[in-house]
Figure 1 (cartoon, rainbow, N blue to C red):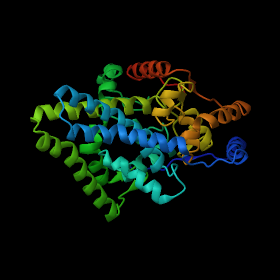
Figure 2 (cartoon, rainbow, N blue to C red):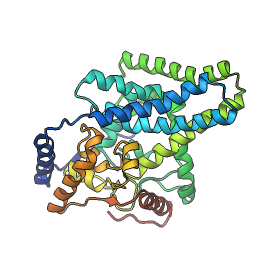
Figure 3 (cartoon, rainbow, N blue to C red):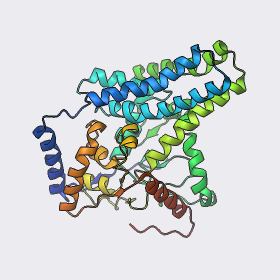
Figure 4 (cartoon, rainbow, N blue to C red):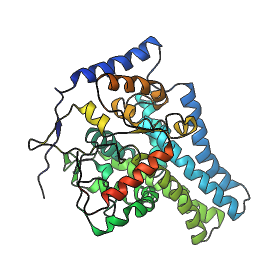
Length: 366
């Protein structure tokens, strides 16, 4: 097994930008006497999204419905599942939803009740992805599937020439993978990012097993036994739920880092990235569709990924306001602020990036 070398950042560079952007954002909250955590709007959104998912499930399980109506509710559950992941679980698992750890922990369990595992997510996303964004061999989010090349530094395979088509199918399967494979695989994995031979607490093993059983019970056992569905009728509904949620989640997350403007830097021979960590986050991350209020509401501000990476413990409800502060500070210090004006522009940029990384003759220039 190859030796793992931890990557560090040259935080002596652009230190002024780091201090200034933090100061300006802090001043915004202090001047306006605002909490960095959830407000009433965020609480209302939480209730709405939880109702879409669990309310649809309750109606599906109790009301006399046709198969078409059941299918539609499964589709709504997929939309609700992605929304909860974006807007509730994500903030809670980052400790951003509330200043109270119990509240964050409780709301973070929504992630587990959706079939995933919050403990593993905090390792692979909060720690690994947020620290080593777009760094090949370190950022777990670049490892979607063997047939998808999300980094120009990944080994090229002939199948990558078709990845601009295959990728969207792979994204659709993301939550299937979470529910049945990923969490178990990562609990048993010897090396997880910078962690080698990590011992997971017994409590987390217990939470994993119990929440998986709960999820399999209410999504597989109960619909088949209570509703009297055949296996293929159940499968159509279950697949609709996960294909819907998986596609939404997969596409939204990729638009933040795998687009034409974002960089994929490699560390030097001393395993150092020649940028301050905050600058590294700026050049490897992109925002999109800031003026689309409906989209911003639904995806929990994940179209404001720059602000999220710089201030992950600030609730996403505040990202629209602080984005202009971050953008102006970046402009003042000559640092890129990557932005696509619309959602469709960001999707097209991601599509073109997939095609570019899928070419055998493509040469990446940082």
